[in-house]
Length: 150
Image (cartoon, rainbow, N blue to C red; front, top):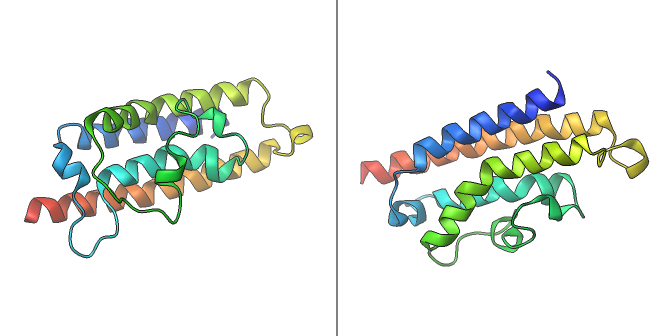
């Protein structure tokens, strides 16, 4: 699978996830069920910030929202307040758009050997990203099941 196909697969997976969460209420997106450390919207925000912040440090500008959400959704963070409708809508909208930005940056030659991040490393990072996102998709489904069982 080439890089464009990998990014498109990530995008399709994210669009599928959006279809699962799009009709949830703000309260459901913010609920932290017993036994969990975070909620659905935190997981979505974390999926959004991971590519630029964790895989490509110093390239946070690849996110359409810039560094706006990195402090709230990076590794080691957890929800401390309920997230409002505006931020929820931005996160959901930017999930597929951020991958478009990533593909554009790749096509523009941003990830080349002379810039310290060659093609093989970039492909490996995309493989990790796919694994990481599947893990968070599973967490979101588990949180949703816990919410629905209450």
